[in-house]
Image (cartoon, rainbow, N blue to C red):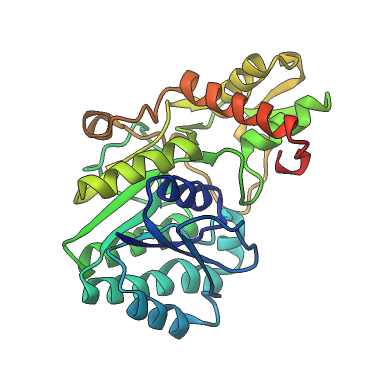
Length: 305
């Protein structure tokens, strides 16, 4: 089976490529500025979504993938609010081009979306709950969801939350906490923002299952509901760091450019009934993260932290 993965150098995308390669899929891995390492079964494809949309469409038409996993996005929430035109081009227009060609080719499309399509007023959102984004990032992701759903009947919209983990991609909250605490630096963490932090390694395994099952529709794949403060404390406890270095703060103390949902946690009941991978247990996720950290340290790869 041929699988085309966008955003292959992102935090989720890289681990998805790794998991697919382990299973022997033929992978075409799109990246832009950060090239991924060479792997068996992987063909690297450098495409800039901003300036090379035609190249992207032509490549899809040439490859004719059986499945497309679209993870690439402008995920910096504040940057999306500041540069709406850029956010629209990357998150919406690129998705439209991919979904249109994918629909024409009959490819199975997996679109990676976000808990930020919800307003955060109640938390533990189900797939059937009505989206109501409070920032421009969430809006672009919701529009992209609808584009995918209207382009084909052969799709899955996978909503997840606050992806973390090692590998490639920009620094995420867990990596920041581990780096700071390992250097005995203080960490400020919100006590009144709740989310469902999701380990990239487990998300990748779950997405491979979704492809193999050809699940159609929207599905929430995320970790346990927790506050950022509770999450940071759990990391410190697992890694043996000083929990007293974690300083509790309120969301009112931070001036974000874009508004954040108060509680965007996701109900994962549907995914738990379908997917065998334990993608949701925080204990399991932190065990894996800790072992990956130890492996990186043994290999002397400090910059991966």
